[in-house]
Length: 110
Length: 494
Image (cartoon, rainbow over all chains, first blue to last red; front, side):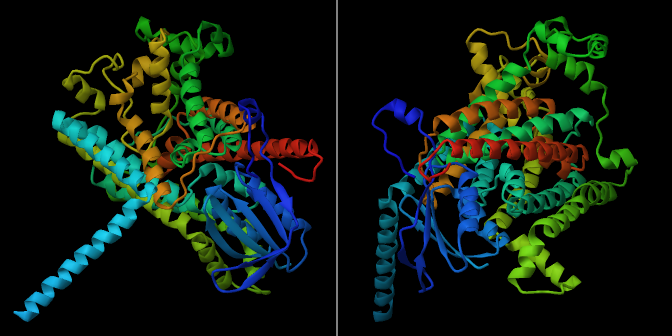
């Protein structure tokens, strides 16, 4: 999650927080399909391997057919998550580049 | 006439068109930064060469560093995640990429060695490699990147990784220069054996843990490639069969099959709904695993080929100047202050990361008034050259710049400041990496990648240690994350 700091010590002692939202919204993917995002994790500004582990623990809590949105600016994570998703029997829908990172969409298959 | 006119009009429009395209490309600030970096490298190279053409030896390191940096960034080639992702999340992507790179490097290295331009020296084989690997492997889990991984991540703007490099530099310089108090930590047999070596007094080789370790233990060990062990003399059999096939390609293939069996098979068969898999399906599965991450596979191929070419380029230059070590060139050019007492500097002739960073740290510490040369590591072997004339040091800088170029072009460059937690992990993990790298005589590049690819089986010991350390590191890291998550009560986690 992108955090704002007013003082330098607030920045110095901040924690890398991953926030989860269940706000439903729809996203149009590059292949034309429109999906309804059911879960969203915001891993902005977090280091490896937190985004990967966030995806793992999120997928555990989700039901079949749910769509997860991962928001991250970690380049290694966007390379690993599609590979990770196959191991977890889910489907990688798309990776979209945004202004300050990426959004990855994953559908739970099983 | 009219046809000719028409042609010239099209040519003009084309020119305007390319001009416009370039203007649009140039209008984006990331592209201007890329041009600035490339321009600066070109100007500095030209300036160095116009001073003295012998700087080509240093520039070869810098240019290969740029290439390594670009490929590392392209494939997000992170050896730390090769180990970590296997244990933490069960993903074999990076481990597969490393094996691909290893096989290609060894094939190119075999060609280079047959042609007689090889620069590789085998590492002494002993238990210290496993122990160093364990410490190193434990460290990389906490820093989130290995030695070259931290370099390319610094190029992506990640300041936490820059801290890792800082920590590796100073921890190594400090560790090889431990004072007399550390003698007690070394066995008496090392001290006795070190005394017998009859080293010059100014090195104080019989004092300091690392000196005793080097002179009293490592120097008594045997270093050889497999071909030497088997006493093979025919050059082609030597390089291709013994060193490349038996040491690298066969074990790497076995590891690929094991990775498929334990990490990829289940998901693959399930995805393709294969219930009774045959041999054919498994072979297709292994191929699918290799190409599952295209960027990683391409980076693996590129790194393997260029790492081999690097050996050839440096070997050819040494032949051309008739030298064994860059120190001789430096002496000819009048730069003697950074040389060791043998007149040498660190100059591996292949991809290597950690020692030049130790020299940076030692150079700074020396200028703060510390005595850094009364040890074997700097005083006898590697010297402490000014960072401006440290040839392998420019390979490290090249990796940072190469990664920055590609990250800017792909719009992935982003300044990132570490949180306190990440910064502490970077410093502590980096110090562990530095110590582990010195005990094992190299990092995952120098002690594993380059070693194995050149036919020295000791590199596999380093991997064994690194995987073990990585396994323990992942367990400890998970405990830490669980504990930190339990400290939060708002439903979010770390």
